[in-house]
Amino acid sequence: MNPILTRIDKQLNDIRADQRLRTLPRISQDRSRYIQVDGTTLLNLASNDYLGFSISSVLARAAAEALQVYGSSSGASRLVTGNGPLYTRLEEELAEYKGTEAALILNSGYTANLCLLSSLADRHTLVFSDRLNHASIIDGIALSGARQIRYRHNDMYHLEKLLEQHTAHPHKLIVSDSVFSMDGDLADLATLVRLKKEHRALLMIDEAHATGIFGQGRGLAHELGLEQEIDVQMGTFSKALGSFGGYVAASRQLIDYLVNCGRSLIYTTGLPPATLAANLAALRLLLDRPDIGKELNSRAEQLRLTLSIRGIDTLKSASPIIPVFIGDNEKTMQVQHLLKEHGIYVGAIRPPTVPKGTARLRIALRADMDEEDYQQLEHALLEILCG
Image 1 (cartoon, one colour):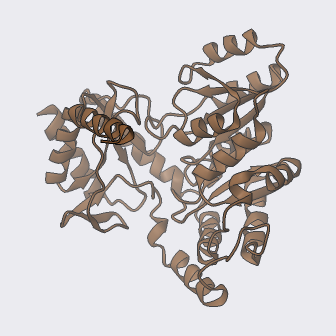
Image 2 (spheres, rainbow, N blue to C red):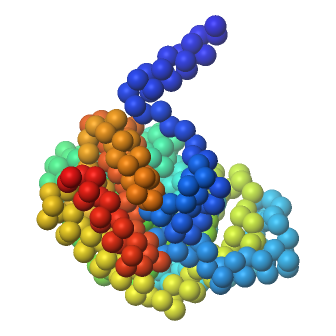
Image 3 (cartoon, rainbow, N blue to C red):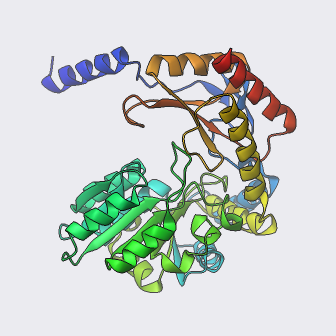
């Protein structure tokens, strides 16, 4: 056998032996709060569609109208002919919404982080990155050629000591998720702002899981009144906003720089007009319903309290992302299966997505859940985990 195929075969066998093999689920209905998995209808608490916007008739109508007017594709990269009028409108409204000089739409949150980090950092840059940052941040740093210095998760004392060790280095970038996607906890943005000022670093935050949820939808930076203190905010339309695409909100200077140097913007076809129209509709819908995220956070707090009273570990979650810590890979899969038998579908998260020995269920609450859904979830978790 070819040596590369031999290595692949061994690696797959190792993954199977460690109960980490991933397979694509057979989902026949993949939207709204109910989905069909292998022919069974389940309450969907594995999605990032936190606000239920993906099935909004407002978004669907906007997308359909754009499809009729502009066609199915942008046809080229944005710097050639793919930069239609919907791009301009969306970026102007997004910048106003985020309170920044300018905004830039990219094809996904992943490519937004690749674009940002590979452009802002180079081999002369030190990037201080939270150990639990999203994979797209890690990949963007690697692509940049910068030196990555990882600090312990949300450990501001550790970050401060690392910055002090490199105080003479002129090019420093601090990057963090604002809401961490697998733990559901929040970054200490106030301390990050203080440290970036004291050490003359650039500060970038990933608001992917905070957009739509905190700060009347604008993100955690706005919730804390720190939006003007953070140099770069990125986020996505593909989670709480129910559509697709990533964004960057920053100064005009920085956006102009990305247009000229961001390879994942320059060398890819623009988003379809229907997607841009849905993004616009989602942004306007959020403006009309600014407290929807706050209400969801309140329900999440009630559930965490219920679970905590019964000794169920939800780590330090402070968002609609509620992890149920289990630790063992095989047991995590067993509990996921038992929840399916109770009519509930949640994510079973194992290494390498999370550190070894920290497998957990990932429950993603939704704004369109009703009281019966919450009761169903609570009853199932308590019966399975507490006996």
